[in-house]
Image (cartoon, rainbow, N blue to C red; front, side, top):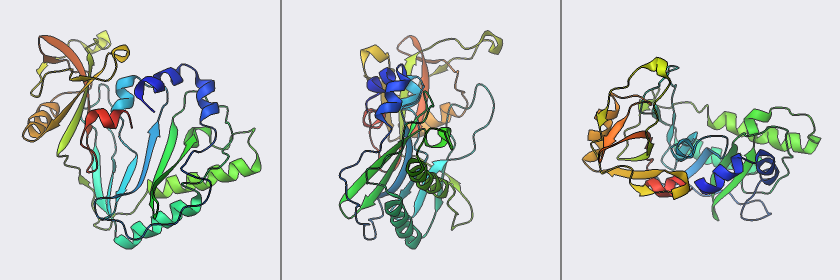
Length: 284
């Protein structure tokens, strides 16, 4: 789903809920679990799509958890509960063993990832859809569940719909609570960044004036993601990554970044090992 389509969907929550009520995938039969994936393969991923957020927030949203073939698990760590928050998200990487990766793929397939199921239509507006991706013998398959966490045990669902949702909530809980074989999660060190820029809007007056920071990368706002969105993206690579990280470490989410004589709000999105371009990530 593109950002533009997502924005339109958030203004019509009932239609979004109806469209996302059932999971979608590549076929109606259960896929076969994959053999041991390659180290760089995305073995499993859980991420949000849609929801009532700004286009920039949707573009810059990280997957909840990504498991790679070599056992790397990349996820968001605890976030500091302050406003304005840090400019950079807290992203962590931990390690699980190869056998656990295979077991998790098997569990995802058993739960129904890649199969069409009826999840009902819970009475929750503006919630995100949770997308599960698993690597099978036929390639990557997906299943999407609207308001998986937000709906809880909603009334109005059939016993079968509730059971289908429970399987995916259990899978969600397991994938977001994986143990760390190494014992210590480490900060994720990206080799590329996505910077999503919109014209700067002054924050709450109670915050006072926010110090400007000169943007150290390619000129903002970068490539347009749609004129109606007023949103651009810049992919930061090479030596520019450390320069941008160093500047962002001293900034916050309300910092005005100056580039080409203008001020910009910037949302930073570390690119994961399987990602290389901010525009492709934004429209995934």
